[in-house]
Length: 207
Image (cartoon, rainbow, N blue to C red):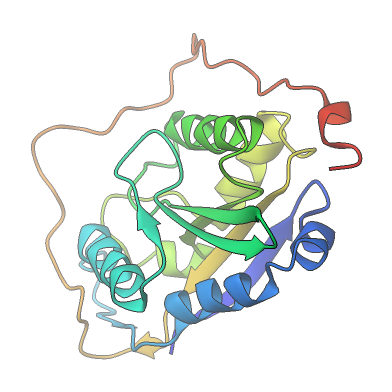
């Protein structure tokens, strides 16, 4: 089975999960990401990040209770009801963005907006581990890139988590594909105008 080999928690995420009774939702998220077989073809970058994403999305759908969204927010959200209050975890699955792209900062902005507007209480970014990324097509973002992006965006005060997904090992790959051709991914520009995520940390005190 795949493993979550590294985790980075920001902004009191672990305490918030416990306090808001979201531990079971968190365990279900981990089960979705790990309770299946994921072996990779070891001959170069022939394992498709797109097929892996579809496989994970299918697992969210089959589990039930997770609301899907294609863009502009968490890809998958699950809520838990405490009396008359809903508390929610939102996950953004990022397997197909170039490490040189500013789009990971955009992902963080989406999660920040969902937290600020009360739609989720904890935001999660799921990315390939540094090891898994070496086997996927197109030089995708990896765990170390995602952690740096949180720091670069000055978003470490937000209740966010970054999870690193890693494959079982090498063997017949269910996600084998070919590198994509045609439209190139958006590369990072030196003149990027992506804003820093700058809501005051005091906003979250006592929440």
